[in-house]
View 1: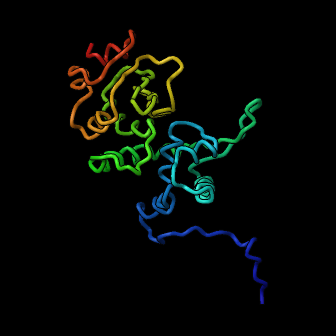
View 2 (view 1 turned 120 degrees about the vertical axis):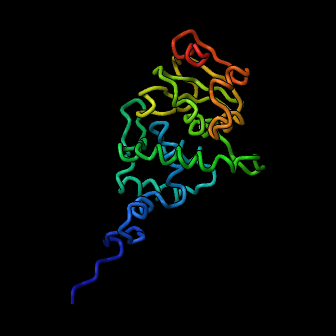
View 3 (view 1 turned 45 degrees about the horizontal axis):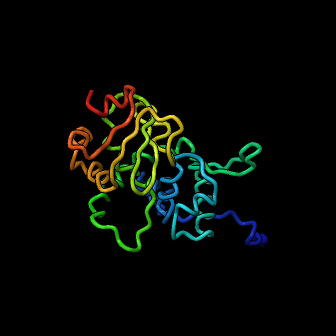
Length: 221
């Protein structure tokens, strides 16, 4: 009778729906709680484990470590060591992981109507409004970096072809091509399609700063 492998040496089989269906296979990879929110964070660029944990309020350290390991095994993310003097490890999305951008954008559009009122227990980060805003920016033809200022903080987005590579990032951009100031509620309204970007600028609900082609396009020039 063959000897049974010790538990520590047995290959771990992830839970699966065991259905020959593309949607089921996708959910095998990203259907666990927190996975898509980790992708949301990594779409902004490489992150250290501690930074991920700080921007995912409510996730335990064990669950975060487990999800990141699953994402590595599933080919959605990789872990790499930064060169000195940083000497830290970061997680970043693979090409397959970046392919989830339209999935998250669609989820953000679908979920936007549920954001009618902020609950007292709701955490918030400025860059969480990037996904709804990206929908309103798809019509821009000028390629560049657009800095976005909200009361909740700052983030930046890329317009034109660059949006497909690195759609948004944390904090202010080092050298933005243009800057807009608006409130979080307008971000959600733009994401729902209640207003167009041009209408919000014309009505004075968006303040545009900058002198280059991207700023001119935002002003309707």
